[in-house]
Image (cartoon, rainbow over all chains, first blue to last red; front, top):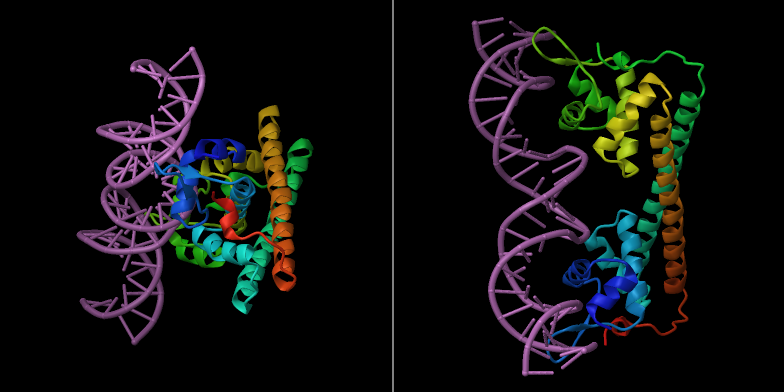
Length: 125
Length: 125
DNA sequence: CTTGCCTCTGACGTCAACGTCAGGTTCTAG
DNA sequence: CTAGAACCTGACGTTGACGTCAGAGGCAAG
């Protein structure tokens, strides 16, 4: 498939796909005229990349992790990287849960007409 | 307290605090000479702001939400905003859990010496 | 009083993940 | 064969949350 089709199937922009290639995240075959060509598994890969971006990983980090995924080689370093990022995401999840619960509490408070102190003026002196 | 102390206590930079004020997220009192002055609750507020940033909210969004928190007024719009962001965070959490589990699966695969297909060349044609 | 640290207001710099535009080529439907 | 869509390679633009630097004033200690 060509780049436009992959973009549609994966739900990203053509520009993003070229960027991924530039960052070494996604290899592409080339036709004689220089057009990029992808196989079907590329769709999943792009979505994995997107999820990793959404999890706050930078291109460089993803570029370090993907070879482990591809080769399924398990050097101590690769396992360490994977685990480290996994744990980072885990912490991020617990943080988000806290923030969500915090918001929930605030929502309950604002829904409850029983108001108790705390105005914006309390933060300055 | 002055800005440096608040920065230390809240674990952010002085620049960040000035930025928050600029964005209307954090009010500050002023001494005669123009120096910013904060009360103790500002520490918590800064940390709340940080958590909201970490949850992917933009300054403008936070600026829209904080008045609801402060005033604890509950107009239909404010409740809608709060709930919308809460739900966004909720979706983000489930996405992150998926990504984490995905990473876990990958880690298991790389730890398991039983290798099964799928090389980097599979993505290009 | 002066030394050194803190603070002030601009204002420009940064970085990442693309968006967008220019100018040209390639593919495909009719 | 031709129009129009899709693709190519640069290369500059954008956005948000600050970093950083310049130049000047404020504040507690010795």
